[in-house]
Image (cartoon, rainbow, N blue to C red; front, side, top):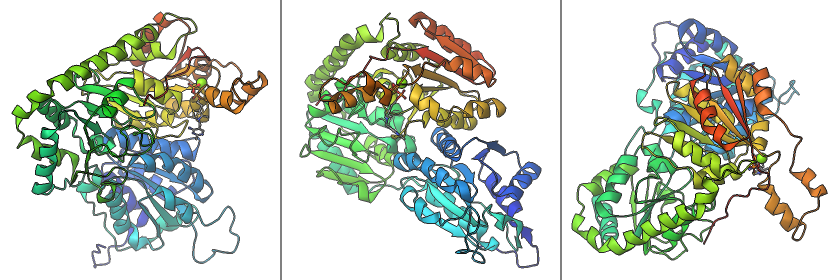
Length: 564
Ligand SMILES: Cc1ncc(C[n+]2csc(CCOP(=O)(O)OP(=O)(O)O)c2C)c(N)n1
Ligand SMILES: [Mg+2]
């Protein structure tokens, strides 16, 4: 805790505002009233935008989108009554290893247990969704606790942090102490450290990769957090090793790269699952080897020879017995490997690479009719195809879960290493506010969000927030009038075919989201024919306001399920 020691008392709010600015924070996302004086100091002392949202969960998702797009911690805030709404919004960030820092107002030792209005003990609820969950009870602790928050959020495998400030509205910031706004810029973004691997471990893993005849790499979110896409592609090229990705690591390698087989696992592309299950060695890089990426440990099957590279020692070997493991930053490990590869080992993989080309071509041939379908109502696969063709080279694509994740994860292609892709780790409704946060973090880049209608309904009020704060993201709503991912599940629940009445469990009244968006001051475009998709995207990207493209699609269209 830094103190000046010569009676230079400063207000907590001033120091907090200065420190956030010092860490490079450009936006905070919140529902008032919390840390009000800090907001006043931000206005006086900094350029930080105080994005005032309609709900705390959306604020957390915006902070999450901001963090994933920029690698810088996203900041969100709530007063005591909104604290658990905010905690709910940290759940996706926790699953996705996204560095979000949440501030809440909280209990004062002078009055706790006295039934203070709106107050419960919120801190335990943050425990399962944070890496670091703490209270600040003394104003003198603001600087060191904030530094610890940034350190915890960004280091190792990144993740959310919660700081509860004393006072239901965080009135602690109104107090003074001898404090100074010391920041550690190293922790202003991910990764603060690039731990080097042990040389012997790199050598052992590389030897196995070079010896294998049918190896494959599964690249996860750790590759994206480490910014290791270029090194990954270089290693794959040099050794002729195909690459599958997790959904979270989809932008580690362009889909157009001949060695890329697509997203593996449950929300996946057939060529990826077939390639991974045809491999004689799987090398996981920055992947939790979780249920979604491995289709519940069926792709690859447990027992397939495996190597793992990760920054978290506890990830190594969690789900697959390993032939070799390397602890370290993904980029550092890949750079070490690139420094000592034997390129001559690649020649023997020619037959394997030919098989990979066949798998890629088979997938394209099988899905060409869906991807190029002229059907009305529009098929979602056609939307993916149009987005592949027309997405700008520097775009950030943000995708919701459920069918949205399946359609886009499997059928949308990244064409350039400069394109980014971020996806919900499982929470329906995440994508739209996350896209707004991504736009706040990267205003010069086009941001295009893909969501279903059920996903969009969750936080539709934030269209007004986007207009007010000029968060000019483009949101594409795959509007089929229901949550049609539930269709298969209800068919099963009804023993084969569901009743007509069962549709009340997963459908909605027809709604024109373009009109609703227009009412809130955004650009709204309604699309009913496939050939209108590309011009709508161009118009939305050129608009100087947030845009919603409402695409009427086929409620019967079901995304392909994973192959084993
Ligand atoms: C918070 C949350 N609640 C429930 C679900 C379960 N769920 C997954 S997809 C889905 C329906 C999605 O509907 P929509 O966004 O319209 O996409 P569609 O399936 O119609 O393409 C639901 C309810 C979830 N993933 N997250
Ligand atoms: Mg829907």
